[in-house]
Length: 363
Image (cartoon, rainbow, N blue to C red; front, side):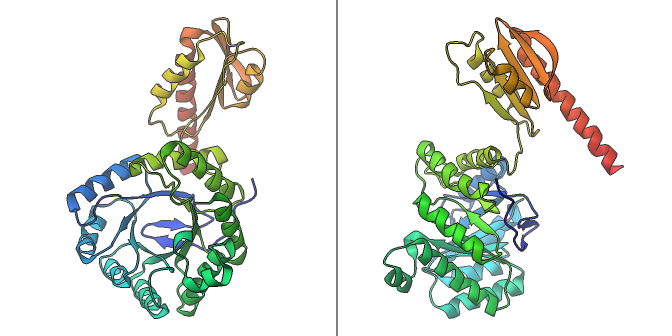
């Protein structure tokens, strides 16, 4: 993995986006924004799932009229999603939202964009310029013949130029496509041209199974390049289902680990412990655990000892017994039925040690 791309800071409510800050996970409500109770219920569900920013579409005045109430009820920053009618962006800014997403391909004239930027600057509201392959400006489609990476980047740079002319620097950009290669190429090109924080994702990725894989390839590829400051996994599923996938992508790329990482054998004919049963119990007992720790559970004598010793905590099992490792050092030999208890005891020790170290730093 390369070093993270250096960006400016953008303030979104009480959260700062940029290269010196954690990569944030966000999602979007799917309810009718004019339906206040349904939308508030989904906001609470997304917050409970761990969404760190929440985007809400604002298609009409009935929806805009609810934005102040949503903002007052939320514990995370509120993003208004606006297409076609720039007046909905102005109403959202008046309502006190933290960021407005506008689509340069459908928001209208440049003067309308400038009016939104001026209102946002006066209110201390951030803007996301959201370029999408499905709605590229007509003149760019005519120039390039299709929504190519070059067309997408030209669209983004055009509107960043307008932001610069207006003295507005609290801007985030996203370039999204359903095509992974187009998305990767465009984001890599834009990353070379600007220091704005980037929101990355694969748009309309699909149903959870394939959509999660497609998102992992696209988002993960950019994260491994050091590109990306906030991510959204776009699935055809309840929005709260997007959140754990996003955090798993962050974990798998090593850019942000906020929960235990479990490593286990794929199983083969050499396995002589009930590895699946062990993993099910470990997952159950670790549910909701936020300790960033690497746990390896291996079930044979070939790679098990080596791989277990590379984790923070590891078990290499065989013949009804297991060797417990802590940072590469064998610390105990336990029976198979005691393996999970032994792992959990080590986790509690690590939590206590880290709490003690944090207390010493704060003293």
